[in-house]
Image (cartoon, rainbow, N blue to C red):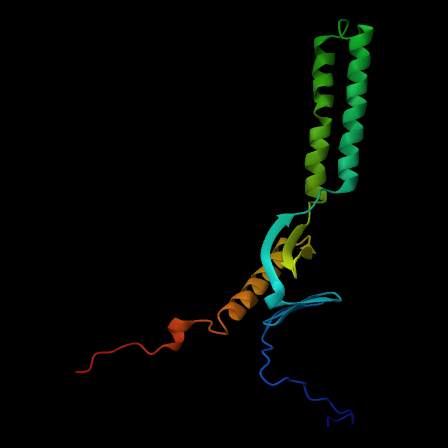
Length: 173
């Protein structure tokens, strides 16, 4: 019992269970046995074929690029069919060329402003599922490495570093 009179419950442990914590942040827990994101939890031994990808681009940025490109294309077609391109000066052609680069500039700014998320995909019981997605590259790398370490521990039965646990051979003199 502590000072305030509240009792603390002992930690529940299952005999033979491994509960080594590899990564813990709010909403994300990686142990040797389980991978938990939000309310979804997976057994590490059930996860196979892990791969990382980048998610889709931001919908607002894609829509802005498509709308800008279609409007510029429409203006270009209109000028071409009406014969307005023949009456343009050299400066107008330069401005028109710069305006045609606007969709590419919008795409670059959109990717910098709202980059595609990092995604961790894997197979769980015969179905491909999105296991984890994050905008932060550092957090994504930490979670991915923790999950890979948990898989290695499960694959080798807890035999993490055989060289460090072995006694070196020394000749008898």
